[in-house]
Length: 280
Image (tube, rainbow, N blue to C red):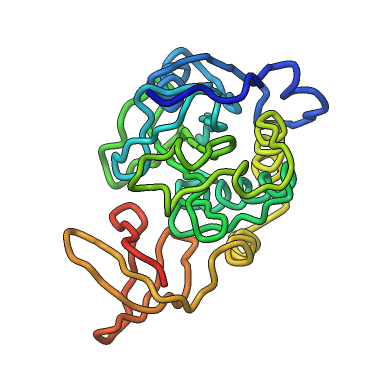
């Protein structure tokens, strides 16, 4: 069993002190143990309107990452949050939220700790080349949580799950991940406060989501590209059981990556069906 971390626990009054957000965090829940913050957020959606609700947990027993991967963290080691967003007008979209959430998480890490993190397509946060966190976005049709089952139906509710490693040491990661994973404590020369990370994450998200009229798709793409691992890098991808290698040419705000393949030709890779095998 992995050991517990620092005695610092997330406290509602500390996170909300000076928060001053307009949309994100208008309601906050902090739980000791849940199976999944995303699952609990969907439960709250089924109970009624809860736009801006942020659900935090000290520990998850069944946390889930992208493509069904398991997300594990010792108790009290990470900031694990799920944010509910109602979008009846269809002004957001999962692809926009993916870019926006990654930009917000990177900026929150910098503001809280001074650590310069980067975005690794499609949903990873990295520091010094190692994974620092991840993002999982889920969508459904309405407040009762019906699954989006038709091409012509537009999601009305999103849950944005964000996990950031904060206090882990090397031996808190499984042996197979110790060379590829990191935490803010490992990257930062001074003490890391999860409260500061959580508060800044809410602020950065709110800066985009409370003021959508102040930015457009080009602004968001430029912000993402400035914080992403450099375009032009070599990458190995897996899609539908097949591997592809090539040079990254561009990221598309619609949720994909444009790659010049080693074997010739350009190909667009959709984030929903593609996983990264390796970077140069």
